[in-house]
Length: 249
Image (cartoon, rainbow, N blue to C red; front, top):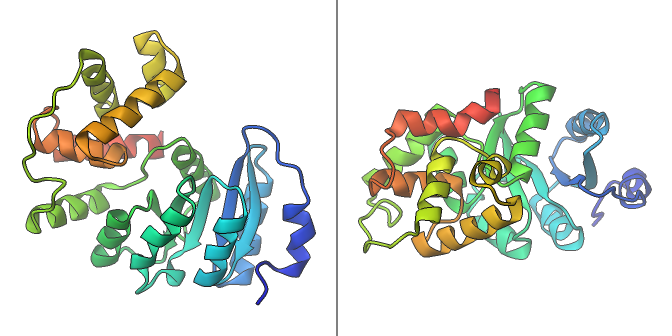
């Protein structure tokens, strides 16, 4: 079994990766589509494809053997296989997964976000928006549109998921509350650091502790938890606007 197209091995694996470059594993069953996506990323100074795969098994191997920040995965590879995502995340927890899908499907969308992917984007998306999505997710943000967010919230509520169930009151420090408020306003880590007079790394450390304390894994779950437990006052549509504002900015 070939892990990568032989013609690409020297080109993608032999190149040195510049500091602060977003390293991508590109997985799609259609070779012509992978070629097109690579051409888009080749125009960006801060994005580089470090490995490619045309099947779920090859994706597993690529994620295990290559240092990467993001995996851009064709939705057809995950059709009926969304339960494989937790295994991929355990294999390479540092890699954030983006799924490119043809059409929005409620059940698959909810399953993908529940299993831990960081964003879903259309295969017909413009090149500019694709690049923006990759950059946002590489910084730790979640990429989700209004329709998908409402599907996720409705499903969580219908199934009385642990995420939205009442939990014992958790005591948060004033600094943690301030950071959560900034997150609810759609601010990125760098913007929060400037507002609070600290560094971006300190904000990341605080966020990690907040996630652990509240039992959530990312900004989306943090927003849903805070909404349900009235830590913040924004409604569902306001939260959706916050999480999608960065996509169109």
